[in-house]
Length: 254
Ligand SMILES: NC(=O)c1ccc[n+]([C@@H]2O[C@H](COP(=O)([O-])OP(=O)(O)OC[C@H]3O[C@@H](n4cnc5c(N)ncnc54)[C@H](O)[C@@H]3O)[C@@H](O)[C@H]2O)c1
Image 1 (cartoon, rainbow, N blue to C red):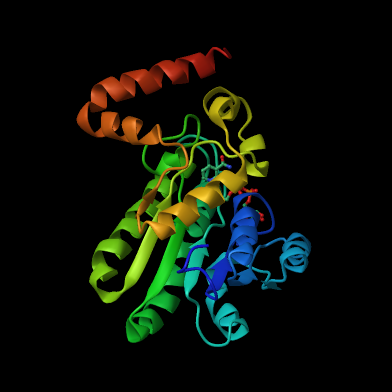
Image 2: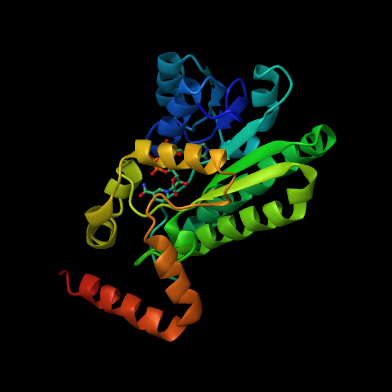
């Protein structure tokens, strides 16, 4: 059991399925009191019924107030997990870029705005951001996703370094492929780069619990991502050439 989780009031957004549902199940199994949120009201109610959680359906951007009331006045752990897969290039379209920005970044900012004052007053709180390895690296064929996940990572990092000495803990989960509806929707690019090493959503929950127990900011359910991230930082041109080879493979339909 993870001590910081037992009895905690936890919110998980995007918990109607996939990684969010797996995180919610694990938090409940670890003895937390859980609020689950999703745009899909039916699916999130089903998850809530299954694990004895409270469902707060709706947009992840506006869940904190209702969730706090449902948890008796305080959110201890907030998981900004809802996300959109948003593929496409520079020409994906304004609406696609706007939605990716809104869900993948601004929902985190809005939640933090609602949570941080209370956490500073209490001297503690925990913000968990489901980013992606795309937030450290990039995702072939998905510019809006890659750019906004870099934004989510940057925001999590900023929160951590700004409030670290005031009791606020932040975790950024950065997996590669995870077998969910989102991965299934990535099509041939996902088949090429994500499917071969894809893991189950439960493995992401395992990694988060370990990361919380060890108080680590960066949580890598695929440990090999650390090496790719290092290569990107230290040898950017070599890394870009390697990534471009993957791009060309994808274009050739290999
Ligand atoms: N599946 C992967 O390979 C993978 C890898 C790395 C990171 N991630 C990230 O994990 C998170 C969860 O994705 P998943 O793979 O479980 O996908 P998923 O599509 O199964 O789940 C995402 C959930 O978020 C919900 N959602 C979307 N917009 C919302 C909003 N505005 N408000 C509330 N709920 C909303 C959807 O209804 C859906 O149930 C996302 O942030 C995603 O980017 C996924």
